[in-house]
Length: 588
Image (cartoon, rainbow, N blue to C red; front, side, top):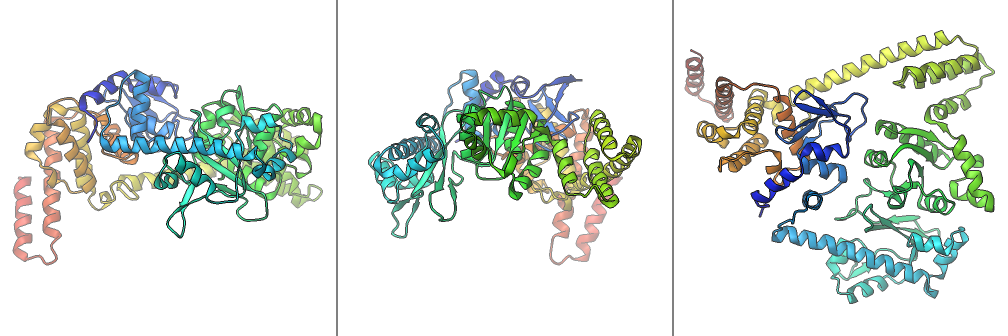
């Protein structure tokens, strides 16, 4: 059962899309619309458009679009009902919920309750004799009892029935424990503890909820770290360890470390703006999350090969999110935890010195190239300059390119103008390659290739184009819905996705009221809503005439009839001739 129309209408009125988006994006007026830098992908030129007249948004850079609910779903990483509740709370509304929604909401609440009880259980275990091995490990790593309590660290006992028994006594069912991923179904069919004989790190979201766990083994058993799998409340690509603390202490800068222990050690040393990814390489979603709370990120990964590779991968992700990037190199290949502990009481001051001296990502990348080349040899200097030119060519700022070209000239004795000339040539080749790639992508989009939402489009381009125009027209002028539906039933649409959109629109328009994407958001996925938003954006500035609308309808009917005739396995000559005669008659 969908949400009542009256509630959705009130939700739309109280949560104006422009107001909501403006709390995340700096918007400026452009004609009747608003534009800004897209919060869902890195860009230098604004391609993110908000259309106040119909309550939709669309980014021409990454193709993300939708309504106010879709925007909150994407930027806050929420499902549909969570986004509705978010907006309802923002505007003081009470959400009416049906049985299905109440069921999912209840299960989500149960999972969060189970996680909270589990975190408390693990922490108590750590402080009891059974958890001595875990406590010895943590204190041996230099953590104080205050820090252990602050992060809620714990210990999972060896017996794989201990947690399950405790939680079942609290009234939670086996299915709920499995849904929370604190247990799995054993061979006997009964639930079994997922974590055993591990030091436990609770993962806490920005609202203070325990959403998952990371467990570190104390022996050589693999895997070294075991993390919560994806659940109703936990998505590892979206969050960051300790971000619940760091967001309040960022002051424009975050430190990105590699692991939980590094982060905890940094917090204990006074660097409470440190975070880490959740058992995966850094993701674009995590980079954009950091960009909400900071302008600069200092990468502080391990100095080993894996750490250097992770650093190289993280730099463009952070830059694309609009962040300034610096890289901190720790001497002697140590990680932050080892470095701070090795200097005892001076560890914090020593690390702060490294932090102050850390260079930006450009200097880091150039130094990496330099270290791999023998500058005493001519071929080594050529290799160094070639690699450095590649780096400078990737920079958008003329000032940055000029500064680093000057430094390279002083270092190598090669004229600055010669270096900049090579940079310009490299950028010209890159620009040509980029334009060719964009043109190919435009061509593919124009003909419907790689369209995952409407895969039938490329086979029926003429029909799909007319269908999209008609859908955009109805969303803009809903008062003509009855007239259009009388001329064109939904079963006359050629592509199934557009037919589903059209049918949903007709259902909503039956009452003769206004309609926008919010009325469709419960029935379509975020990607599908992006596709509908693209239709709206494509025709946002078109003045539809009645004649044009009739042409859209005629094209769809013609293409449907063509498909019906040509789809038959065996065609009779007279069928084809009759079809061609009808086409000729329509053109007269």
